[in-house]
Each structure stands twice: as structure tokens, then as C-alpha cells.
Image (cartoon, rainbow, N blue to C red; front, top):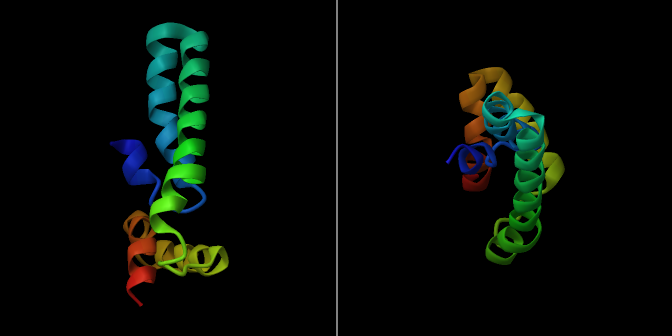
Length: 94
């Protein structure tokens, strides 16, 4: 659930979603389990971001990476973390 929510934050959401499960794995199972969690998380994220998401979203949204990043910076500055979370939906509705 955390990975799903944080993937809406462009550029940094992946890292924000990865840190808590990696820390829990490190504390419960050691560095081997933490490494396994990071690898599985990275592979799953790559598959979702590269194969599944573009198939469903495609060009229908029409967001450029630059516009999304600028909007992320602006709304994170104005509203803080909530602004960063809401940036893509707000940008899409304009």
C-alpha cells in the first residue's frame, strides 16, 4: 500500500516507499533480507513503471516529465508533503 501511494510522487516516491520495508527487513532479518527486499522492490517497481503503467496510461494523460517535476517542486513548497502527493492529479486536471 505504501509503495502504491508513494509512486504518485514523481522522482522521490520510489525511495520514500522503499525505506520503511528495507528498514523493517534489516531489523528483523539482517542485511541479507534487507538486500532481498530492495532487489525485489526495485524489480517490481521497474516492471510496473516500464511495462504495466505505460500500457494503461499511454499518451492519454499528456504530461511531460519536466512539467511534472516543476509542478512537484512548486506544490511541495506551497503545501509540503501533501502537495508533493497531489501534484500529478492536480497537473492532470488542468
